[in-house]
Amino acid sequence: MTKQGRVFSGARPTGRQHLGNYLGAIKNYVALQDNYECVYCIVDVHALTTMDTTLELKQNTYDMALDWLAAGIRPEESIVFIQSHVPQVMELHTYLSMVTPIGKLTDLPTFKDKVRENPNNVNYGLVGYPVLMAADILLYATDFVPVGVDQAPHLEFTREVVRSFNYRYGAPVLKEPQMKTTSIPKVLGIDGVQKMSKSLNNHIELASTAEETTQRVMQMVTDTARIRRSDPGNPDVCNVFSLHKIFSSQDEIDMINVECRRAGIGCVDCKKILAKNLNAHLEPFRSRRNELDQNPAYIWDTLADGAKRATVLAEETMTAVRDAIGLP
Ligand code: ADP
Image 1 (tube, protein in one colour):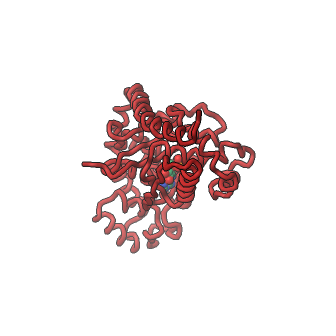
Image 2: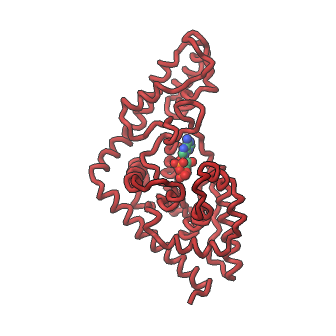
Image 3: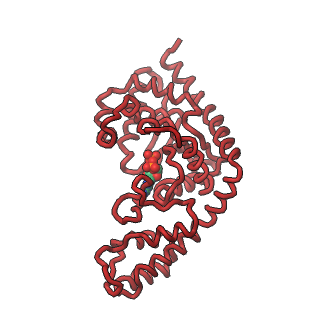
């Protein structure tokens, strides 16, 4: 089947992925492969903007790539690579920075958030983060970028950079990417309140064992108004139920929806069903992951091959860019 265009997405190397990463990003990455030519990048340079130490960078990159491949990203078809392996992105970043007013960068809500989070490390790289992100997208002549609402201003920024660059140098060399808005679910952590995140330690790791997964599920906070087993619960506000809707059968969902409300099923039993279904869902992922993990060289070779293919696309763009600028 002919593909409907090129998709680009990047994610920082955060190591072993969790259920939030899976439902919020990886699952969509896998699905997009059917209809698009996909370029998936582990953005290690972006990670440097907020990192105190790079000691775990290599391991985290490996673990993330392993999870991506085990989850169904097909590297023969899609380009999967590490950002710093295609240094042309740094070159494009510099050229794009010349058509980027600094105020636009400091006005972005994400920049303000980062400053709040890291008040003692507001570095130059952090300010330029969206420019590097634009370079990532534009270097590979991307048609579509899958974005959640929080990333929309960055993509709009990228589109403005394209217009400024093409206007400034009088040639349509950069392609304006389109937003591919996907309804990305916000997966809550086991605390049932905050977004699932490794840093909050409220996550369920995809690669953990069935026993560890069950243990995490059993720790999940349910409807806090339900105190005793005999109290009726409200699935509409229960995080366990929101995961049932993804991982359980329709019959089980219907049963829980009714029985929880009349205290016919308790939270412990409800969680046991979820743990069973979640483990069944993750089982093929885990066995594939274990298999891939036997051969780390395969992962690194795959990433190197991805970088090689990405470089071909990058050089095509850069040749046109250098020419349009009029570099001697
Ligand atoms: P990044 O800075 O690369 O977005 P994260 O690790 O925060 O790094 O997220 C990687 C991807 O996983 C992003 O697309 C993000 O939206 C998604 N993601 C992370 N946590 C969650 C969550 N709890 N619910 C939904 N999606 C999530």
